[in-house]
Length: 207
Image (cartoon, rainbow, N blue to C red):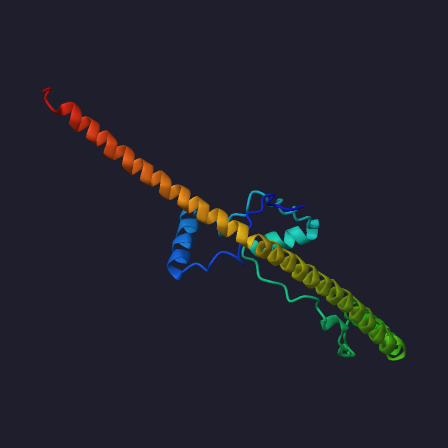
């Protein structure tokens, strides 16, 4: 849905190019009528931005960082590293923790091995299919762009033809308007002169 429902068309194929001084005066006039916050405040015709819908955990993290808390370094990968063998004299709790860490590391490495096998078997085809789909999207966008360019050129051609077809009539009307304005000014000057003569005649003493 368009934001502006009016079209103030110009006549670029008929009107002469404006001078730099005229352009500067027009820009100054536009700038003078713009509000002071026009660069930071959205236009009232624009729809408001949708409200952000973060999860509770995400919101807590945002609030924590906004309050000055340190940024987290992401996922802690140290638990997936190969654990050190505990000392032989370690207690049962330490041995259980080492065993738990070893299970976690083993599961991670096993899953990673499976993923690498799947990548080796299907990764190439998936990559080629993804490239093909991306290329199709790109080609679709390029076709749409070419269509818009063609429509724009057709509109400009029709606009130019319409203006050139009406150029003679517009110039004639413009000249008639100028002559009409000139005649109005001449009549106004003559009227002022006649009014002046009448006033002078009225001021003369009666014979």
